[in-house]
Image 1 (spheres, rainbow, N blue to C red):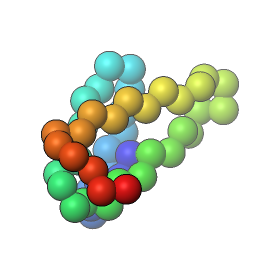
Image 2 (cartoon, helix red, strand yellow):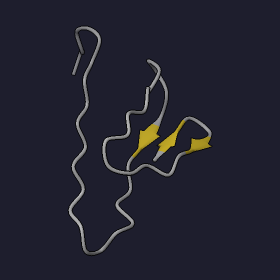
Image 3 (tube, rainbow, N blue to C red):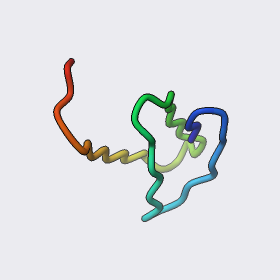
Length: 47
């Protein structure tokens, strides 16, 4: 997972804070397991 300029290796049950306005990208590097990404927002979104 990329957040801003940082790269994180994430595994099951990890939680990563994505600060407002930061670029984020989630990449599934495991061809044998599905990726589940849950995102919780702290307010109203305009999109």
